[in-house]
Image (tube, rainbow, N blue to C red):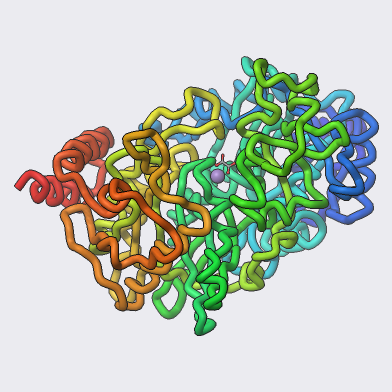
Length: 597
Ligand code: OXD
Ligand code: MN
């Protein structure tokens, strides 16, 4: 305990055998001045007590215990419903190290600004110390952190999303290092809100929001922004990717990692149910993760991946028995729902749930009136343990991770981009990732449906300059490496009538099957300047009917359109100046020349 906390007589600052941790807790307690300090052990008893307390004060509303046992609804402040990219900062000593892809502030100024907000902010509240491990507790690929928060809602969510409590604390004490995350919900005033990252200090400071991506600091803040910085230093990759296993009828499983921007169907793809014919033939999908992937080269030269998370923080709207039966089965009990509507008998409800029930109350707690607002907020969420998912892979707990056969990049593109293409090699694949574009969604505040460049779906999450990040990706291509093949997909292509041309969901397995065959050298493709495309007949399309327009545009490429696209990609890369790796600029130039020729 340091002198200030001793004077203030705040007991409980020394809950660990690690002096560095006790000192930090004492320092934070001296600044924030909580009424009490609680070290989380992650036990059922602790959780039950916190949940009871939140039920009593209205933070959580118990849902129908018969239909949804042990499940709760949380209604957030209406101004605190999504990530806030304009208030999310990467604070490196040099502005260029954060890059044009990040909002930046000098560390000294940033600390001063946010510490002024933290000053006394926990008076009347309890300070919770949450030791957590991102990844299986005994995996060499896992990394630990400690979040300090004044929100019991954050504690309950972190317990689901991470390996939290006593075992994590033990590992932290053994290793002596941890990422420090300080969070307070403050007054939930959008004008007094910051999400700050100090990668060199392995530190996160978040004030004024209780929303998952801003407040569950193990997720985007640690597992992506800080971890991407650590990964660059240590020779691995921290990515915004789902991980799934595709088991074929012969019982062989290929693991695929896939990057899509927020709210573009990662959870649905990770939990895919094969179409009937595939199911009958014996195909199975195994879910390893739905949002984040940490990958590292193994001794055999392949990339091995773990999911650092232990739960799903999924988008509720659109989740139905038809679109994602595994997700629906997972959230039948022991789930925290945030900002969904409820039925008259207190069951959770959202647009697209398609269960024959009607909402009575909307996410703001008001009588449902579709002319006023949807029942569920478009970014309403469920938080649930991955272990509740019927397709959860036992390999997800393997400390060594799973070997990755293919990496997939994908965006939400109404036009131009075909259903699938394969990069010709690693450099081209890195360019395909770097050039990713997608229409914005409700996962972040701001306009929805605007096309923006979102390289590798990491625009909001890369903790350093994208030019250095692409160089880091390129560095994996070295002698002895057995790198995955790289593909690009677009499930969201629309026809002239504005309707989606590809059925998506379970039928996406048809595309994954082609990829696996390509990995195994068993499928044909048509070479084009943008990559290798399947001919219509190269995909198994039995059981679905595609219109003539769909067959043409999903499997074709528009040379003129791509030429304009590649000019745009060139301008985008040039925005990073000399720092952009030359090989990537050359690759863009090579393809543009082919398209123009
Ligand atoms: C998420 C996001 O919550 O990407 O996963 O915003
Ligand atoms: Mn995400």
